[in-house]
Length: 516
Image 1: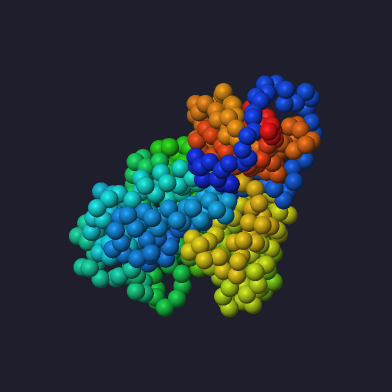
Image 2 (image 1 turned 90 degrees about the horizontal axis):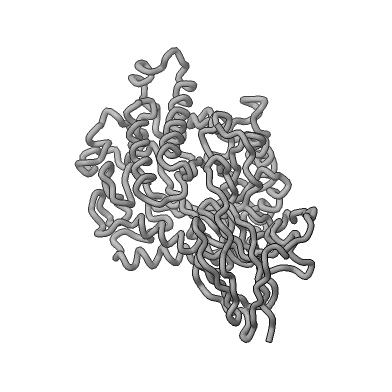
């Protein structure tokens, strides 16, 4: 259970890439000042909501069907790596601080696994060894740039082909065909089977144990979306395991059991790793449930048996990230109606709320609103009215690069003019590391000794008013860096703090850089 409210959050990466040096001005000299001189009396500080100190700013990197990475199958290792690095550099350029990378699109692996075959999206052939294990590289390169790395899994999708004979011999669906249900042109694992829950949990636990990931992430796919697939044939499992429940309640209970099982396994293995879900944006409509949202769209609760309210109330997720992929004013699903509904759902629960944003729709004719560059930035402006909203994640990395209508430029100008630290989720533990030691300035370059337990450092430039309230928000935050050095472009007074992997923050150390 999660009991305390997390710190008002925000995750934001630095103005600089880890370890990069950006020269402020030549010929400056630094004069270190003892920390005790920072404030002689406690000040009353008010944070400016336009510059949140803590805010998640993320991007999904989809591998299924080569949507974002790699751009095609069969690329050389060097080209795969270069493409991924460009995605990360674009994220840092836009002052994002987290990536959600799809590592298991359909019971396959973009990493070396003894439990599931290699993904076809690497080589073009399912089960074919690509000649390297991408995941250590994917994680390390993200961390070098100060980006939090969330491993994204699809729990129930087994294959994009219902012909089992086409799957690799070691594919779990081929080894255990009784685990599967054919629906339309795809193959799914049956959520009603305990063996399926155990297998999915084992796959995720394996990754948590072997790789230095920061989070485990599910998207919106649980039971298949209704469509041309006909009936989802889980009759035998329902008869065996229903335990007196109606079919819809039993299906929701199956999903809830998996979520709880994964939550426990992740945190038993590594308590610091976050686990969260990005559900379809409508839980239920008021027409179906008086406590639902003022919308009239598909209900995740009724159509795909995903009960986000149950996960929040049970505390089996660290965050929810509803996919609010609709513009303001849309009658069936108004963004202005959905944000307050979700904010109210998480209030007082200790579960963080981030919003999934439809960057991929900007510049399309899906709705007239998406033809206007101001629609998506207006979503973030609206979010400021709800303190429970701790950040946003964009689908997907391709549009972060292509910048449709120049919307990324506007987002940065209006909302991401400063970096931000990650939201703190108290239940994941962690504590502030030691302060940076030995802070000095040689010319315009600040250097200090790496602090035990620190993964990164925050650098602030003090305003003329002094240090008393300088770190209450991000107005004065100029960078988050991963090495103990920072090159400045301007003389002035600077504070440096240490951050652990969850970005708990130490007290500051001060240095003055004077112009020549």
